[in-house]
Amino acid sequence: MKDRISIIDRKTDIMICRFSFYVLLIVNGLFASNLLAQQYRLIDLGSFGGFTEANDINNRSEIVGTSNQPSPLNIYGFNRAFIYDRTGLHNLGYSPTGNSYANAINDSGHLAVTAEVNGIRHGFLDRTDLAILAGVTYSNVHDINIFNHVVGTDGGSGAFVYYGGGNVKYLPWPGPAGVSGGTAYGINDRGEIVGD
Image 1 (cartoon, rainbow, N blue to C red):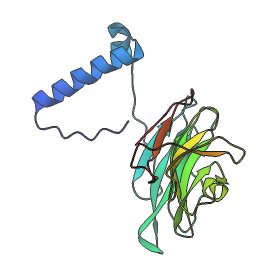
Image 2 (image 1 turned 120 degrees about the vertical axis):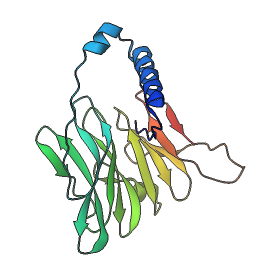
Image 3 (image 1 turned 90 degrees about the vertical axis):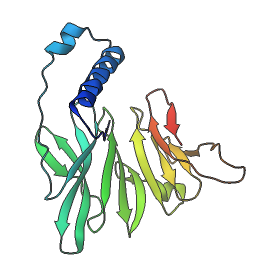
Image 4 (image 1 turned 180 degrees about the horizontal axis):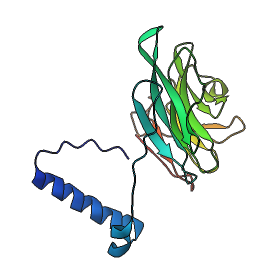
């Protein structure tokens, strides 16, 4: 979860901490004594020379995200999809002359990655190009569940779920009749999907 909260004063800071504490207690069903006894440590994931942004973590402690890598081909560098595991930070090798973003990883280690192909974004399940399977020129993927079902959006029909084996299903969009759109942002292991 990415929170971007500007702390104005110490009083606000205390209120946010208390709120987070109670939410954590309720969501995880933890007792206060167990929660207070938890020890946490920060781990520096490293970088490819620029910023690093972690997007997801699985139960094997594998972390995926994007790290910026300086390049003489682009003054802004290129964003590189990465996986961080016990051996360190690794470039996933998508799109050497474009940007790539590892958005999600499931507990089996399968990835939902968006990478530029000839300057156009394509969604991938591991190395399978979902844009080509769906017959579209543009797609973004956002999440993956334990069954390797991937959700995202494409440039034509909107929100979709990929079930594997070339099976892409477009999701109903509550917008105006005859207009496609929407984006699927998340899918859980029960197959429930959230989006807009």
